[in-house]
Image (tube, rainbow, N blue to C red):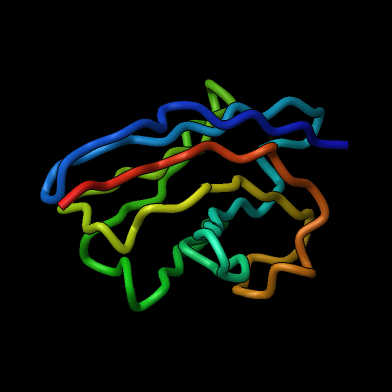
Length: 120
């Protein structure tokens, strides 16, 4: 069982940076794959990045966003640099025991989501 809570969202102007955090609780946190998804108004939820032994990124955020984890703190991060208005969305943290790919339906555990707003 894994519980996830996101933090670090907010509003920023285009070109700025934010760092999202996902605090996890559960006995086997270090063995889980972790991911970030996002959902803009009127859009379906889309993959952003994931991490386990390797990292994966959506083409839209590659070279701007960095996913990392600190197992000692049971926390996964998403460093977002050079933010663009199209990055505006609710960002969700997700976890799964095995899966670290791009398919939303494969992740078992989810946070409640946190708003990121980027103004032009």
